[in-house]
Image (cartoon, rainbow, N blue to C red; front, side, top):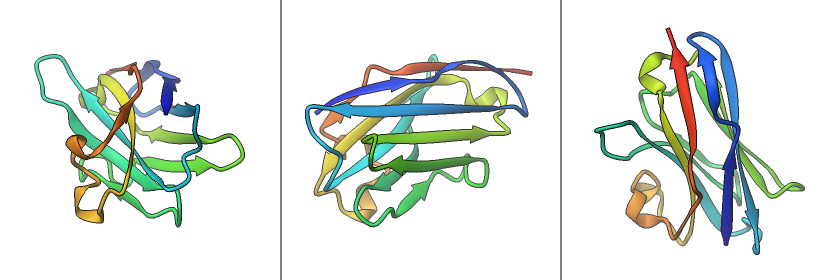
Length: 125
């Protein structure tokens, strides 16, 4: 599975931005897809995840109520809608996919098998 993350850029705090994660070579069916981010000097951290089958979603507390993860079956793409971003959301955002991930492991980057190249998001104050 090859993942292509896109949509990053510069956004003002309080604005909105939508990231996309497109898969090629395989459908997302049967997979969980997650978004992680890494700011300079920080460890990679979980942002949100969605199960392709059923659409169950999980969010980090830091983004709950502001970010929304969704999927488009026809386009084989997962989105991360970022509303009201804050300067602390500045990071490189990565999407990842994995099969057979149990619910309690959706926030663990080690549970994912495939990773995209990352897209940079900068939130200005």
